[in-house]
Image 1: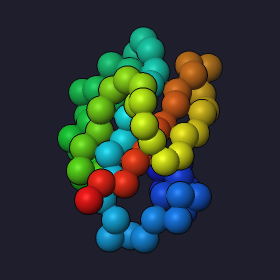
Image 2: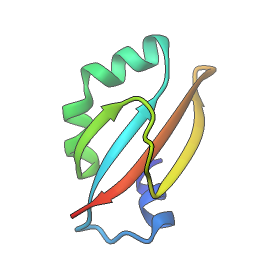
Image 3: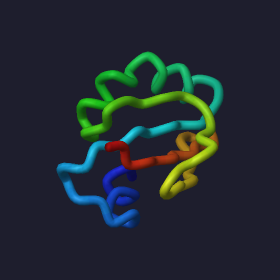
Length: 76
């Protein structure tokens, strides 16, 4: 999903990003526990939990009926 957002935003593979993930319950706990690993896998400088005030693109989905939002922003 994050790779699709990168393309939607017009980023190239070398662009570094920050990803914010908003979710709740077990989904949030799992992502929060593995956010460094996730950042490495998606090529992000970091993954943060919560909502971003300023972002380039956002996507909403569900994981096992739990809503989840991904916000990404390119960093320099």
